[in-house]
Length: 229
Length: 353
Image (cartoon, rainbow over all chains, first blue to last red; front, side, top):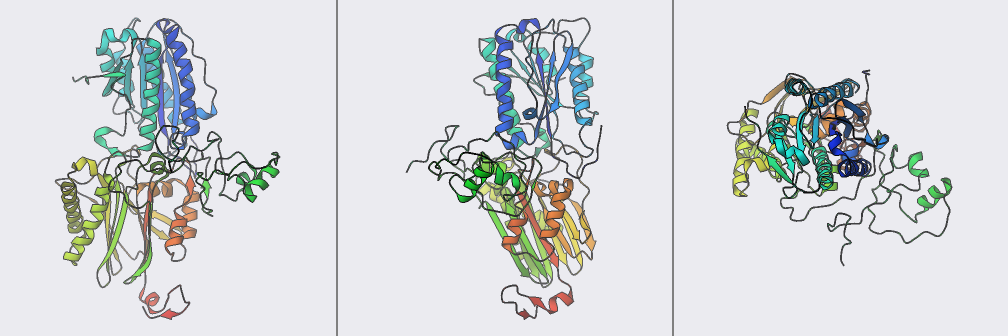
């Protein structure tokens, strides 16, 4: 519920959208659960990040779930992510939009915010009935005032269909380089943390860059060319 | 002597410990600061820290050697607003060229005006080794005509402090060359000068990107032009009134920046009868807009004419999420009655203005 406040603190809303389909079983999901505390540590130790960034965690398999609503990660217990069933991108995008809407609408009226960023991470392809493009379009709808910048990271079997990653991303998509999926997951989480840190501390940028600063080192990631229509 | 390496391997002071603890002090003299013996800012071995340990029920075993590399902020009465985390030590990155001082201050009479100005490097810049990127300057053009420039370098650009400083220098040079020109002409000249400096330093225009405002005070009129989100407020007994509409949209994105060719059409404000006007960069403007406590603090701090130390103190507040450079140029317009008798603030004597 919106409240009026005489103290409105600047917020950088970040939505981590994580694939927890069956293919993540074993090393990748363990690596994800091992890496998430480092994000919390960054929030606790770096005031320029911890005082501004608010993080939500959305998982998806057959369904999408908001496992951590938009929060000060320092104040919440991190969930233990579990693998589930298939891979439904449409469910991921619908749930992400819900998480953005509920997270930002809960802020006090007039809260200054950075442009929301969605970090999408998947090791596979959409494997569910129905098309996922409509849900993506609704998420990225430019007329929506909370429309996020979507950054896509692929690893594992995602390399079989890099076009999907390119379509999902607003502009920036990456394929992880490491051979070991667990290492790939770790590097992706490191890239997320670095990007959150750099964006939090770079107060403004001309519209050309939309305020987002990515830290995806080339030794770990192959940047995919933007999808042009 | 070799400087101990930091946690990230870069040279510099050792990292503070216990950084994970949240704090919500109301200044260094708050109950929290006095009772929490584990806070990073707590100096080891001082009377204050021993008292704090005792108050917190901590064993008063002999203090370990004081960490002489710990950076202890000096006391301030400026408020801390919201829950804040301890800041890491200030740093400067290697190979930082074009570095302005971390702080710039003024407090003086100039013609029929008093100008109190301050520019403080932001805590995020201090933590990441980046220099202050804001700049300001002012000059009396001819009797009764004051021109002020405030510029804010883009945080993501490697040498934006060069552009911000060059804009202010360019304004002063333009006024010196043509004391009767318009605000728009000064803005254009300052932009041109920044482009020239950029070229002289062999920098790309994007590398020095900045936003800026320029104001001309004359008789009872005040004209302000801006490109980007540097802003201006009128300050009265009732509080702050922003002279421009707050730019809508996300706070980390601005629509216009300099240097630019052609020069974008600036937003403009023209008013009469304003007795105190503050030009400020967004690092401070956002706090003024969104924090009642900051507004109250600044209004109290700026009730009377302030000197350089008062200006520094006014800008030293700590607010959750407020880590950008802060720059304010407060222009107080003296009426003819004010000018008749002015206290010089040093001897207590009065002199004719």
